Length: 491
Image 1 (cartoon, rainbow, N blue to C red):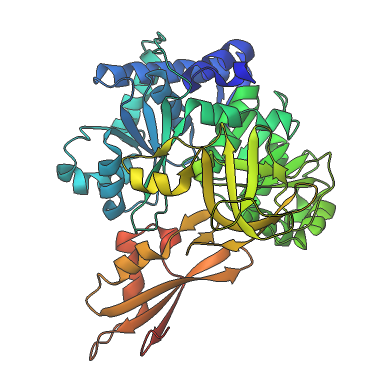
Image 2 (cartoon, helix red, strand yellow; image 1 turned 90 degrees about the vertical axis):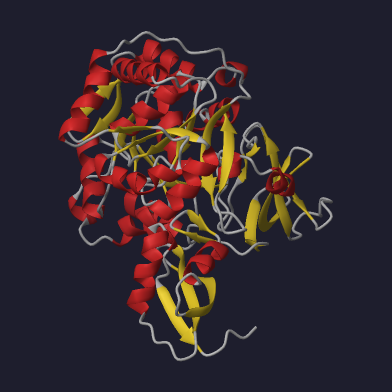
């Protein structure tokens, strides 16, 4: 596997551009970009970043939806040997202050409409001196001028496979997100999965629905397809009709997404009016797909669902079901090539098959650590093993079945949410005496966020006021969907 991983992401795109030249790489609406054009644009923006004094090891934050500019910016950062800090476009100024400050980002690339959130806090971020916006009348012309005029010279610094490439923030137990540092080797190891496990190649066309700032979205819908010469159709926002229209118009051959999308497709009343016979495989992860619905989906659309498991700290994919192996309902499959998995007890000793314990992982996909947080890194990385906090069992044939979690965490639509972060925000409201966050099962989202609130004596507050308060501080997926007021919190 050496030739796949002993390079940098910047060189990966250069090699793909040389190999696939005028194949379509990125498609969005009427915009179509070839591999050659994508690489030239990334080089041009990279040279602009270099002119700002940015280079190897410097952090550049990206707060963009799924759009061609994201792909260009992501690889532009790699061309200069920088570290791309990918941020959720829903991030509030309150969240951005921590994300940009903690990551030591020196530049933010975002859309004009989103830049206002940064401008509110810019004076508190002395290190983040540069702002590049990608749309709007003036900003758009500047961004387009940069990628149109160049220079297009390629000067990728010498990079080690173990050098940091990307930083992705994931929910933290303490209430503050942690920056998982992923290396070039981590991500390039994952880039082989579409070819080796899913049997995809340069003739394929994928549909990118999961946000690129999400580790699964970046690997499955950007890095992996661009490694093998496939085309990627980008969806910034979507409705189910838009999904089906894209499948029919662009002849999509595979979709990698969270279960919510596939369940939505299954239940969509107008689905029968669209042609979907181009679909060959659907890949699901980020949350558990209800087992009973998998055969129903496969029969309805005539396509196999491959279910996998991963987490940001594992870059993210660690196990997958296989097209050439028996499917076991409720299983997340077997470890991918190059990854070891064990089920261990509280002392770290491996337990017998069919015994429930904590799932731990080891391989080239495991993160370098949490940025500037050695204590939390040491909690989850021990002797090269990543302790996932997910509970599960392994059967005699090596299939893994998850049974629960050791830590309080909610997974909603594929996003990890630690209750403590939301509880801290709720308790900032002057009318709240105590708050507890819990997950509630939901068919489409897996779980939803539910808040239990004790009000301060003599104070009245309505649910909508608390929700408005949460939206000021939190990304929308963290905002409670249900609120219950109680007299006492109880046990």
